[in-house]
Length: 486
Ligand code: ZN
Ligand code: CU
View 1 (cartoon, rainbow, N blue to C red):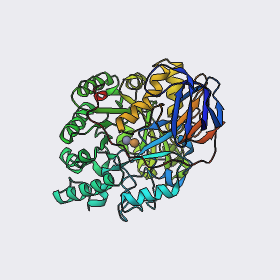
View 2 (tube, protein in one colour; view 1 turned 45 degrees about the vertical axis):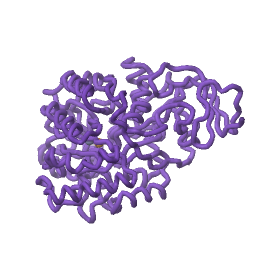
View 3 (cartoon, helix red, strand yellow; view 1 turned 90 degrees about the vertical axis):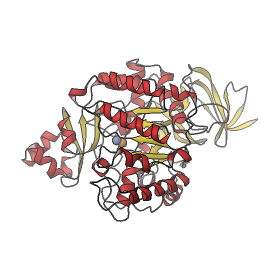
View 4 (cartoon, rainbow, N blue to C red; view 1 turned 180 degrees about the vertical axis):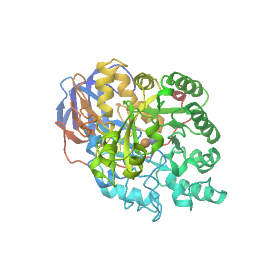
């Protein structure tokens, strides 16, 4: 039999966490037909992997790529890392369904507001199909976005009528292909939302088998209380919850990942709980005084009023503006920042925790972004798995493929086996390396030669080919899967 694409001579790391084995894959159309022994099969295109690792394409479970998929569908920051699927709409902020003419809920996706133009989730799905991005998209609907749509002011909890309106919008979006709802009560647009509001808006998740993700209300002194809130929401809804970018922020909380992970591990025995993490000691979001208070160092990533300050330490920016730091924060608005708030031991403990998935949380529209946008996946594979031996190569790959696909209910993704969709990556385990750092945050990684999306070569020889085979994928979670119990 002749196949469309054949990859031989690879070190197969199949995404399940199983140890590497030698073999290859044969692909017809967008599906894997043979995996492992190829028995003399031939392909129209044949690739000799030369012993390099062949793995499922990486799934970036935490992104803010809602707009990047449309405005820059080549998706280079993700594709060149081997990412073939991005989960969008996180932290309560999604592009769809867009608020009509209101200011955007948060300056993460679009500071001008012109990309908030999708009155329904259907309209966004149609725009995605037109844009034909290079990676797949799994879309969440943001609770803060729904709030801006439904409420005249955001500094109070929603009324029963407003909750009903948001719930109906979520229900329609889930019916049109969204995978779940994200919430961000940490941020001002949703800080006044009660736990009850979050639960009642998210009610439709259970019937659609959707997932609930959250940027928790508090990730520093109050992190344990916030985990309790997250778990209570999951129990009330009967759906899986994902604790986004889990961290313990601020010097006073350093070391407390011992407690948070013990709490999460205990909860996992009673209800479906997941979490993700990016491999850095610094966070990044909009510039707010509250964030600066907990940080040992702050870098300005963008400022609309003072674009010349982008890339500068906040202290340096304040000196240039001739202002004390608090006044400089106000003068720079609207603005974004990188915050050094985590301890390396906590980051490693959370990354190594069995249930932790990898998500970049990259901010693709920042002029001087946090390097996680371009470096997350190669940094886990190179720095943490190979150089520090924090976990094995197959565990690292599992955390970015099979585990993520199972948690988000993405059928036929995240594993290499006959019948699975042919989203794949070939990388050199000995050299794979993140090149992006806080000084040079947009450098492409090294050691990742080939990326395949739906059976088509999207990256060859480390360069994008221009193939754009990404599509909208709808995840349907399975709460009855015993794998949830850890
Ligand atoms: Zn977040
Ligand atoms: Cu985020």
